Length: 436
Ligand SMILES: CC(C)(COP(=O)(O)OP(=O)(O)OC[C@H]1O[C@@H](n2cnc3c(N)ncnc32)[C@H](O)[C@@H]1OP(=O)(O)O)[C@@H](O)C(=O)NCCC(=O)NCCS
Image (cartoon, rainbow, N blue to C red; front, side):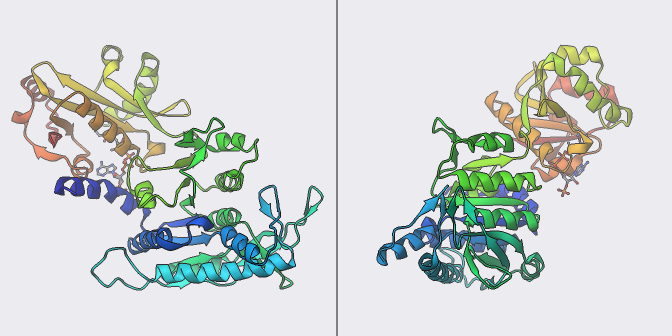
């Protein structure tokens, strides 16, 4: 990889690493991924996440392995509503399959990072009786036998292990209060863990590229309501969708569904802006779009308090009406949460200026300032500009931390330098070089 690409990728990842450090991720992993090179590559990436200080709770599937054992024992598996019916014979095989998968997973996690010449610190993997189960009972007249559901989780014990930097590995098996074992659905266990541990994200590594719409198109983003609509039709994805909706309804803020066989997919999902697979959130996502005239009132409501404090230069309604085409707004569910302006100069076609960057106080610290900045950077590049200026009186560090360099007034286009002198604000001048 060329050095510049590496540096760019590493810088892009840095804010995400910072944001995820110390946070809990619950990751459900489909049974078909838990073997061979796929398992090795997933385990190496999980090692990397743990080394970055992310707390991991992993839930492995077991269906493929149970099916294989059923085949060897000449038992035909039975399913109802995509749930396995677990009779006594299948329960024995399920316990055997979970034991095998758990051991293989622990072995893979013990190998450390992929392609590392260094000895990596050995990961501690905690397993145990974290899940109390109860029977699913009779569904539509079908006795599900030893197919169970989560009754409760020992979150205190899991939190203790996570605090000691161990990874918690959960099998889809639980024991009832009376000591009876039950086979559980991986997705349900993962959702319960994410809800009860108040995880930052619930992630499913699956054999699919993500969640598909009814027309078989991959959904890149879904709201909880859209995910719920997809549940009207029962498909092999229904258990995952069900778990996602359940988690989002109980305050998990994001569910990601992606392919586990895509090499490094998990890293791309967590550490790049584009991500991969399907993101599901409780409400529609924040988007940045070009401002329209009907946004002017919202922009005024955002900027006036900051103008009064001298953070922003005063812009009249008339100015906004004449320059609205230079504004972009941050919108979620038809509400405006931020704005930014991209100015161009008649006397220097090579440069542009980012101005009037504001995120509403109730949406701050969520990365939206960064989202607006990234949007302006890509717009500036599309326009073919080589440098992006930002002038600020109160936010120097914020720009410096995002790759802007200090510059001087003489670097500005003449028209802008004159305006600077007339304003008397003595703003600091920053510039970002976009020529690479
Ligand atoms: C600057 C601003 C747009 C950032 O928006 P945001 O959505 O909160 O930004 P992000 O979530 O991407 O970044 C948040 C980080 O920036 C930091 N930050 C916020 N304002 C800052 C400032 N003035 N100086 C330095 N860092 C600042 C936060 O502390 C937070 O840091 P942390 O994650 O390390 O805790 C927002 O604070 C704002 O609207 N400020 C008032 C208007 C302003 O100053 N605009 C710039 C003039 S052009």
